[in-house]
Image 1: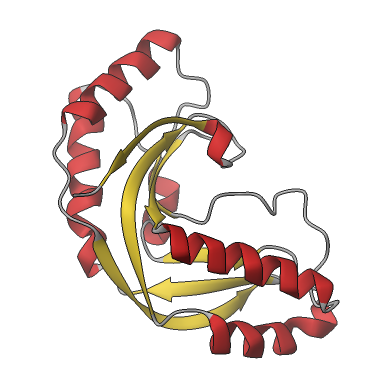
Image 2: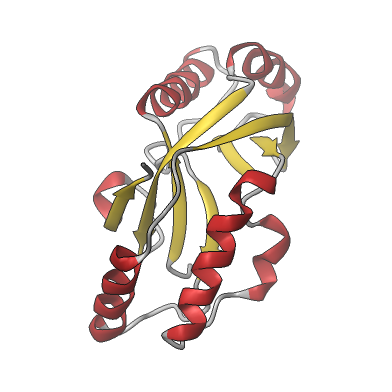
Amino acid sequence: MEPYLIAIPNVSTIKKIFDLRRKLVDLGYGLPDPRAKVLPHVTFAYIEEENLTSEQNDLLVKKLSELSFSKPIKLQVKEIVNWEHKIVSLFDTTPIRELVTSSEKLFKEIRIKVNEDYKNFVGNHMKVARQIKPEKVQQALRLIKLKFPKEIILDGVAYINKYGGEEKDILWQKKLE
């Protein structure tokens, strides 16, 4: 998987999502997932090159640190849906467009190519639960629709250079202020 830039929700939203993931497994709706510790996030750029050199990583981190990001971003949840036994919240992408645009300009400036294959998915969703038993999808959807916030606040931006997406995999992070 390519490196990627993400927006991270505030701590209370992250906790709610981790609690929901545990509850789904405890109720027998979800399967134990080796990726259950993946940090809840909204991806706003997938980098096409899979293995950036340390020089490219250093330059990217330096340039990201120089960017000024706006204050925390509020995203309205439009819908909670099932995507191939994953429960996903879908958002209105308007509030995150500025973040996507500034990152695209940055990548062009430092000649790192953004993967265009994912363009339609950038900023529009967050995986709430990753592995739901097929026969339990409807129950899981009902539970998440009841418990998941109607609005989330993204208050951080992070760069992850490997498939993992856990907090330990973050190479660079900045709070939105």
